[in-house]
Length: 100
Image (cartoon, rainbow, N blue to C red; front, side, top):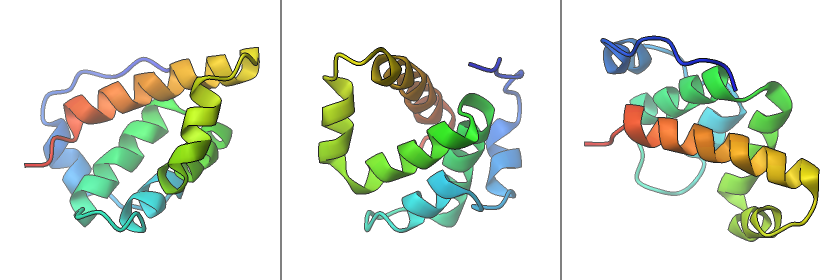
C-alpha cells in the first residue's frame, strides 16, 4: 500500500477533484444518496491506496456485494491479499471522506 501523505486540508483538496476513475464512477452509479464531492474523495483515496487492477475490482464490489463476500471468505492468497488492500482503502476512505 502506498503511504498516505499528511492529511491537512485533505477534504478541501478532494472536494475540488474529479470523480473520474472506476471507483468514483461506481460510487456515483451505486444508487445510494451520494454527492459528487464524496465520490471524488473516495476515488482519490483509491488512487492513493489501490493500483488500477485493484480499483477495477473494488468498483465491481460496489455494484455486487455478493462478489465482495465471495472474495472476503476466499482461501485464495490472491483474494486475501486484495482484501487486505481493499480494507486499507475502505478504512482510509471512511476516515477522509466523512459524509456529513
